[in-house]
Length: 111
Length: 115
Image: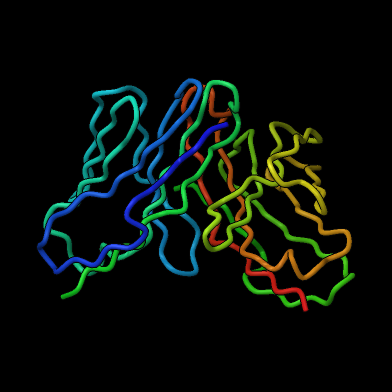
């Protein structure tokens, strides 16, 4: 069975203090790894898809990387508006129409 | 921009009531999904549909049914609501399945409380 574990559960950063969120996964065959951002009371907003180990994608202060066992979401010089819950999800070769989600990392950036 | 619209943001229903949650997408996506999200459990798939009138069970289909009569509309039905169905429900859609890595886009969510 697919497993996705995100750490830490919660993270508090000072504005400008860079850090990384971790997503460890176990799948029989990875078809894609997805990162979403979710603000309180709202639906998840798509950020990135990564398909193969070594791949990297960037968007503003966020950079996602992928290895064969985990993905990192690096946040460089975060701002208060980056505060949100960040969700990681995997798609395997068998569950072609589904994503299996982790429980998320709740990020708070303090001014 | 992809738009997935859930018609009801907040609902309060009584135990035993029949509940309909409606979702519409405007991007001509083949696939539509219903998830529920609970603290500490993440998002879990209830049902999905890959075409009109087609549906497949997800991980937690018990107590739910779905209807897809038109491509753009996907409804989640709670035949007899129970308190353990109090949750946030998220509708989503994607183009032509995820086989090609197409992204799932989510609606804003429907908060259902069953009393």
